[in-house]
Length: 415
Image (cartoon, rainbow, N blue to C red):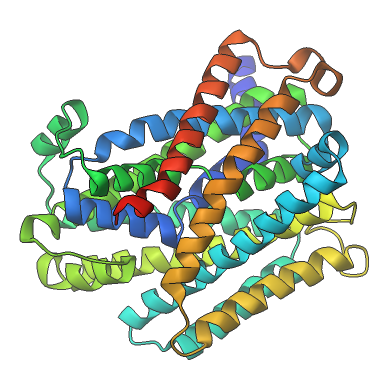
């Protein structure tokens, strides 16, 4: 009896030690852009698009499992493996595109910081520089272990959207019916929204960050089962947060016919409908998500660019040991924050074009990843089995189609 109890606590301790990469990578998916997408979906379509979170969850688990397995087996980052197997020229063009897209994505996160703090009456000229400096200090002066603990706290903080949703007094009967028997008009706008919801599940940079964080943590195949639990927990948390953001806006904004353009609008609109506290909780959730992603996005970018071109990278390394890594990280942060502070900066255009770039680059990254994880010279006996490949390639095909539709739809009058 005592032996079993000791074994349980040993396993729990091991899991808690391994906990991190899956939860953090999944949680960052609920960034300012993701929150805006879910909020608009709830405000416009009510509960009717909640069903899209089910395929989103499946795709997220499948891709992240393969990603983590490849990192554990090879001990190399995805960027390293792409360069070694695809060549420098192809790697150069892929990563230049990813770098430009991620600068746009990071700018969007700082827009989320600015917008959320404006709900509390704080000017962007105060909030953005302060947050930018704190984010930089955390990464440049901290260690991976300390930063990971902060990231996990941020991940848990996103669950405050549950509180915001419950204060809107949702109709659980309608929610259940919408999940089981979804009803909506199949037109250009609704299709674009579905593509937006499913498409925000996986971004190109996530694959590189996940693999790099697994390596940074030093995980081995003996830890695989615990790593898989970490991934599933992270994916569940991601979908739960998305679910309650949609519910919060559907049960308040949709039923009152209120339309919004961004997450900040949702926070402001909630005040007269669900109370000041619900509005503040929603805005604070946006603030936390934006800080979280403004930290991880440029970090992931610096990781994979340095890996791709053979430079040292890692939070645990000192500035002199990984100068290129820290200079690139600092440069992305500063540039993104400065863009937000420019009066009348075209933030909507920046967000749109970064999304288009993500859509173009995502299929390339995923195809590279699937080919690598099936290469026996790289993976040995840990290559995908038939079931893995069926699910993996199906996910890639679906994401390719969605990415193409996301780009093509606006050309035919979608909005």
